[in-house]
Image (cartoon, rainbow, N blue to C red; front, side, top):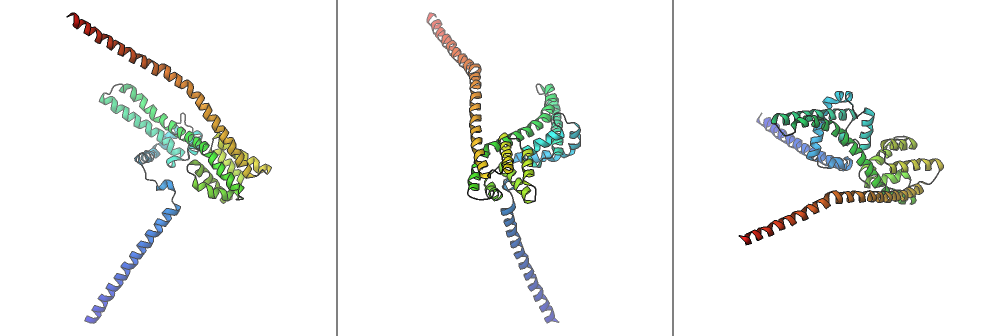
Length: 309
């Protein structure tokens, strides 16, 4: 009987040790697989450390969902069609949807009302005006924010296009097909160019006709340079023009447009500098010189008065 008990205990310990070892091996394999998946599939944007600002915005968007229905009814300067267009052009920042944005502007309006009420109770100066201005600023601030996001993204596309077109032109002239060239080149770019052409590649891969995929690119972006590129590619495909030549020609045109834009901005900057010089720097200099003259006059007069005393 004692022998059976001893054998049972030994087998229990043995199986328990084998089980622990199996769990440990499973944990190591699971950790290795998780790291591999994270390194290969997770986008660089997800890898970035979430900043405090992003956490605050995501929390505000979470609360905004509760006001989505109300926001869609109160849609001054923010019709659903316009909001959808802005969100698409901005690249869906923070996973934003039309409903969530409509709730966000109402949430900011309410927060502005609460803040203005608190300032009024505490007796801050001009609080009676802030009670009105802060809710309006919260409501309109959300609209200006998404519109500036959309505009900034379109400007970034225009800025990145010439380098992208040069790289595509060289790759296509080497005999690589367009789809393969996009798959090879797009991962090396960052920002909206990578996002838009990655989506274009996915659409082509699932069977969307190329002309339709081009049309979707045009709908998602309003950058003049980008629209010019896509329209020339559509026309070149219809007429049978080599794609490499289209990219090369468009790259040259983009650089010319970019130079013209720089010259235009420089020409617009000159009157602004003149205005700043005339109305700010010159009066400040005159006041400074006049003040120094007055100080010198008083200091000299004090010396004369002391002499007479």
